[in-house]
Length: 412
Image (cartoon, rainbow, N blue to C red; front, side, top):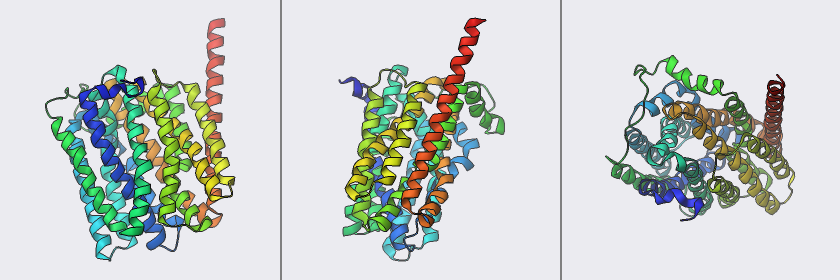
């Protein structure tokens, strides 16, 4: 088997990967339909409304952080994922029925988005840590990369299909199709029973107190390079990851497009994301700190080029570069953090990493939406360029300081 896909030789991972691909496609169907429902039907083409929904969907990553990482480390991750997947399917069903009934209003979408965010806050760290339960340490970096390939392949296919479905049958049926997409992953989780090793845990008391919560932060703080990467992730994700806000605004305000154009733009960005995930998966070792600095700078440049592009097709093609740089950074961050962390702390550390990425996305969404409405969607994208440059400069500063410290130590 190709080195890029070597983790698929593992039967358990192959089962997980197959179910996740279908589930991820359904997730992107719903995300696209939800964003378009808000900006095109439930608000007066208001990007701030999309920003509000994004905030509500990702804010629980921060609010529930004291217990989500602890839960991923202490509970049977297979059972936890089975529960969260069932709950997310139920929420998709509720939203689908509301839309099909013709009585859906914005506050209901906001409520469903917040509830989905609460469930996803438990699902995300468990899902990432669960990979280490089904593959060996040597396969872990590759498996993380392939997970991103799965997610972004779905982002390539899902929005494009969603755009066509919204135009033909409406958003409600898109939500209902997402409900069905959970079935393969639930079946995979059921088949995992009695085939996985026990969860590794420490000997500390089994209560999700503040001490347990702080252990993830303490572990990262003790490894200063990891702490700097976390700050870089916050800067990039807070503004650059809110593509659903600025792409929907570009579609309706700049290009006067419809749902199919919006889905197409997300799919173009996904082409770059898949390429970035493939690069990460094909690497034999975990990405270096220096590599992530260069990728942050690449992200800043790509955001700037996207923001100043004039035609629809130039904008769409440049989104490939933006997706590539963004995916290289986020996947490299996840891979680096997992490989660099002791296994018994991975759930808590990954909870912090994911909460930083998704939580900062939530915090930045209202600001990106406001800028898109007040100054224009191009300015909202330009903010991502600024945040990427700040992240790259922070990384270069830390790297230079580290080199100077090592030189002094050798001199002494």
